[in-house]
Length: 324
Length: 268
Image 1: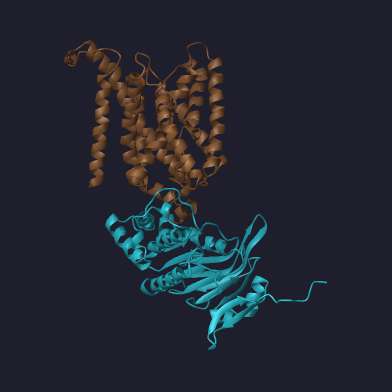
Image 2: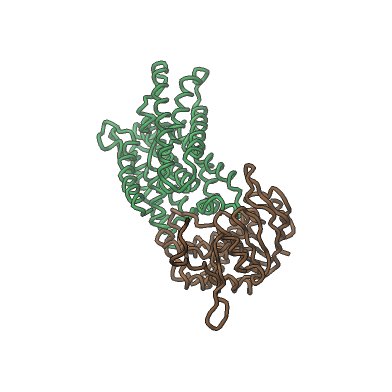
């Protein structure tokens, strides 16, 4: 099938960026040393670049999938976890965890769990406030409100926090892979079951997009399925935010690209989004540390610079009645 | 009987939406539900699909209340076309029609065969690969109709097709096409149909039963079209004078509002 050739090609592109990402960076390395125990090359690649590229793959794929899931539940192709406040809610709860709970003992899993909780609450709030009308503005307005509250909350937490406890506000708002090691990768692996479960729901997502009543008439228990998709998407977003901060627009532009290029059926959208999202975030991370090297940009700046113009174009087309 | 309603009523927040609806529908019959806007016609369909539960009376579809079905089991026997739902994802026509087969969880090949048959019947073949976003309102409505029809196509057991204003956005040629399709569905498959319709042009054609609902949601009449569709009933139903029209040779030509009288007596 032609489509699966494409998929193979996309895997190849991801692998290319992955290898590039291992090979380039501020430290000059002699790659002849790569297999020598204890060499600088092995340490830098093994302890810094490899976990970083792996986590970028996991979270890029996960965020793209979470975006597709959220878009399906909201029946709105322009919903993105970061735009509608899920990531903000996750960041706020992560900050609250750091300030109030972590004195009793910090764990990365606890941080992720807290972010998951925040993301779920934010999503349900948007669902209640904005509804599921296929109308962009109410959802975005609800998202703006929730984002504003959450980021103000993160700012407040950073003042309440004892020094050094809280990573900077800009970390949460813009995202970074700067500090990533194998512990983060271990927690990041938790997105895989969520991704697999979302993929198994692909035909359910297709039907949900027709509308609540239509989905019920086709035999779907709408409310439990919708909540399930929200929880898995919020889990991915929460893990991602707790590990690397808010990375916006991956969840928006990747599924969109897949729908325009290949198909809107979720059996295609989900796996293609996963591989493109993974490749995109590895590339964005590579770019963010190469552009102004040795200074490293927050990766969220790169994805936003890439995604926001696309979003502006889509909104402009939307307001003219051209939906995609 | 496929469907039996006995004195069915629905109250929402103390307000009566439907009252005393009593009707029966046999296999292979087509029932038209007519009445003014807001008469609760769509709500009546919603009671049959199990979207809402009747507050009084007794409603049995295939011998049991809609709530007694498992969701998938119900979807395998009752298909419904709601009034237009907005879709903002670039699904193709073929894909949307294929979603009608979701309740059967069948292999893609058998889904594709049924989708092709339904597209043939509705002359949608030329649209198969088109994105829903590129279609006009009427074209989209036909696709959703095709999806609802695909859901009961070649059903091994009696099935029920509920259509909420299937002709609303269609031009006259497509209205005729859809009427033909529904006649074909009734002839070839073990199906009964309930349609909410507004058309008084040819209301006696193609329906076996007619149910009239008043603006208050009361059942005004139920029975065969010739018995129920009378100028007296329709005038009472819509609150304006409606007369039966006939062609020059005397055959019925449907109903129409009486023309406004020029130079009528001024209000005093």
